[in-house]
Length: 276
Image 1 (cartoon, rainbow, N blue to C red):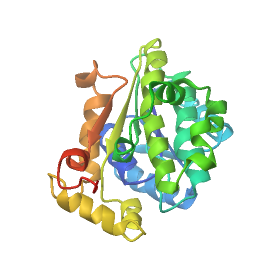
Image 2 (cartoon, rainbow, N blue to C red):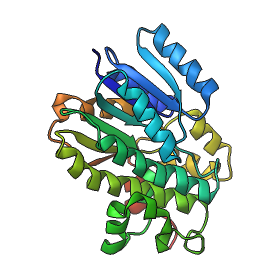
Image 3 (cartoon, rainbow, N blue to C red):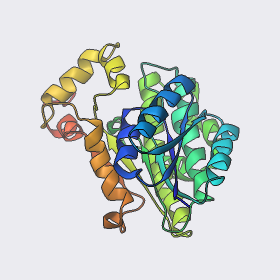
């Protein structure tokens, strides 16, 4: 029987990671857009992988549980790759918080209840969460440990405290990283590990939407002035995921790996510093 791997979000980053580590495994590929999901599954299967498309809405616990139940039909769930989400140019504040913040928290919680010993998970957040001012220790703890069904009721996430969709996205990604820290403790009791990758500007269809959106000039300036001088690729994110999900990364859990070409460093200490 094959190890089972849940992959959410049939996008460039999820697929790059799946191609890197998914050989010999049964993949349940969850996405809300079933046309895209079937297309990606077909591409993967034609390349020798074993991918099963599944309609999944990250904002719904019921949908997440249905995907987990489907995965368990094929054996123990050993791996999780979560690349599902929406961008600030694609969605409203409410949708971003429901999908990227709440949905990711539920997914990590529910997979953590069934993850097999020796298993590993990786979720994708964003450099965006690193550019917000620091939260208080109490706020960080709230994002990390508040019961999932109470998360969206937190005062800091109420409409009057969220400036716009970018701010909502930053809060969601900060929450992702804090949830990974808290959930990795629970995963560890099952002998499993959980980490986060925070990519910068990676060339994907979603990123191209951003380049052509209202913040397009901001993002183009960011990768032009970061130390790397370019955007990244999905395969470079997969390089990090491969380390985190293989035995070479066995001592890494609860961590967030920032892979942004130095954009965050430049934002605080280089050419990308905002005017004061």
